[in-house]
Structures are given as C-alpha cells and as structure tokens.
Image 1: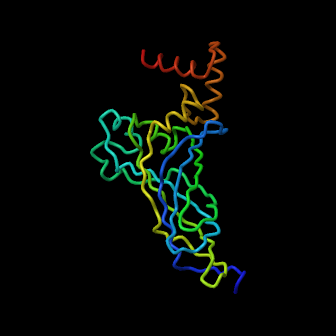
Image 2: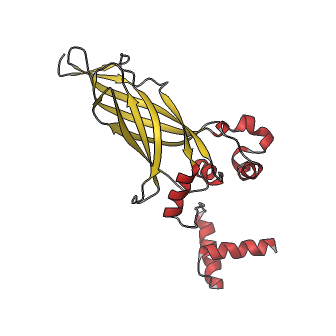
Image 3: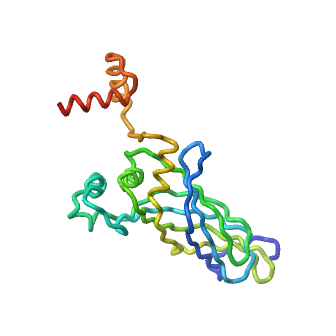
Length: 222
C-alpha cells in the first residue's frame, strides 16, 4: 500500500518528549508562554509530522510552601492540615501543535496562552507563589505520521503514558503578566456588580473602578 496512509493502533514508533525551557512572548496580543520542547524517536524512521496535543497540569504537591504562601492558597486547598488530600494535580491548559519533519530527534516550541483571571485556579495558584518554581506535568496525545519499512506512509498513536515533568520558574510568569498588566490583576465580576460599581463611581466622581473598590474597602475596614 505504498503512498497510502494506514492507521495503526500500535507500532514501533514511540516518541519521547522533554521540556527544556520557557520564555514569554513580548509582542503577543495576550500573555503567551513559549515552551521549548524536544522529541526523540529511536527507530531511525523518517517522521513526517506529529499532530501533538499537550495537556499541562499543575502539580502543587511537588513543591514546598512557607506559611504566608499557604495562607494565600487557602481558597484553593483549604486549611494546611488538609493539604495532603487537597493538593491534587489539576489542569492548567491544553494546546495543540504540529511538530515538523525529523529523523532521530528535533526541537520545537509550544505556545501556551495564559489568563490573569484570579477566579481561575491556575492563575490564582501562580499569582500566590512568591518565587521558586511551579511544578508542571505535560501529558501528550496525538498521532505520528511516518515512513514504514516498505516506504509506505503510516500513522501511529502516541501512547497515553507519554508525559514529561518540568519545573517552571515563577519569575517568568510574573514578568510576562507585569509586562501585559503593569501593577494590575483581573477578577471576574457579575454584570450587576459592575453596574453598581459604575453607579457608585459616577456618584462620587471617582477616576477609576480601582479607586471605587479601594474606597469601599477602606470604608469596610473603618
């Protein structure tokens, strides 16, 4: 069947992935991290492309936390004495890309759009870390288009066990968010709440919503 694609459930093609580095994209319209990845395939066959999907999880149990950070993360994980049960791995992002043609090994980049909405667990977690590293795990799925023994085109699925652990510097995420939202952060509000804030702001002649909320908080403390 030379020249025709065969869909195979199993095969000797078994790519292995690893994560090398991460940078943030300065000219992106929205906050975007660019992960540098490598893939190795040891059969010696020519790989035409890999249609790759990566699910990126945050694994909070794989790092330590000081008391101040534990207090900041109570909303996510509860009281510290419960953390053994509550700090489970959770999904941060799922992205797809095409790995270009290679034989043996190659490198590629994986762009990951990020949000600063502190209502979402991943953003809340990363925002609460003062420094150090965020433990991540990459779980890969997809298909590998390669040349078979007889020269035919074959497709094999990436094994569901294919994954890689990596620790992302928190400073990289913070630098990216500071670039896009200097001295700012985002909290999602109900439309009725925004309308009430707008009315209160206009009534008092306040210059911004931030000033409006800050004034209400001062009043609550007093």
